[in-house]
Length: 125
Image (cartoon, rainbow, N blue to C red):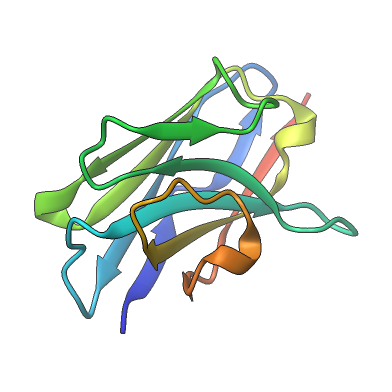
């Protein structure tokens, strides 16, 4: 069993930056654990944001965040990060960390087995 706890959300101005963290516990994130960030805005479905393999060399991003967001991980700390720059109002959402034991770069919600409770990000002018 893997427990995920997100942190780092908050209120930020348009164009600002935030760094989200996701700490995993309960089981070490082995080489087979794919980690990802998803987000869900009010009234919308949960959507993929970014994913990263254990090595950190393979990543995937949603088109809407490419060039602005960066996912990274520190396996020694069992922590995954999401650096968010040039934030826009449409980035406002509840951001979730997710994990699955897989070597593939999954982007679908249904592919992930473990989820955190989420951290709120609000971008305002």
